[in-house]
Image (cartoon, rainbow, N blue to C red; front, top):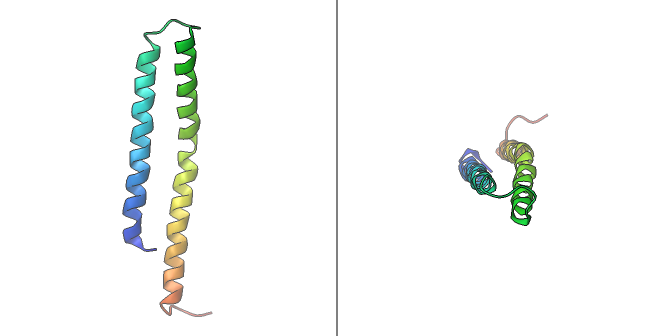
Length: 85
């Protein structure tokens, strides 16, 4: 893994954030036209809660992606004959 491998990972995370944001905006717009405590209102509210839960994991996803890139860089420098201890 090298620096060039960060671009697809960053784009994937960016697309996921945009998709969740647009989905939440659409669900919020739909919910504002529905009657409170109706079945469709409850389903839309559940969808919003699900998107919120998924969005909470973006921090973890970004940390794991960055850690994988750092581990890949360390591995790459280790194999290239860098300083030996």
